[in-house]
Image (cartoon, rainbow, N blue to C red; front, side, top):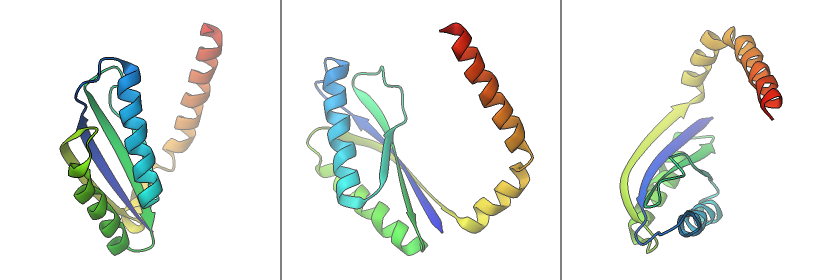
Length: 127
């Protein structure tokens, strides 16, 4: 298993409200998902009107396929009329390298679960 991650910075011209930004971001996200069968999420600060950072994830059996999908996405980005592409960052992770990291962090899983439960409890008290 190979996971490809692409981070894309977008400059959104003419956005005067969060609604304008949402329209552009949702359009880009839906198009990337539909055309390339990838997961897409906004990972940057949602309150900045004229810029956005998208995270794209692709999973495949072979690194070659992941590379092809990410290359197609990067080559299509400049043709978008809704936004201007800034910097893109790409990373490919193989199952072997991820397995090594998960062995080291297995013990931390219990601590993470406890922290998540504690925070969930704090959220209920605050509401």
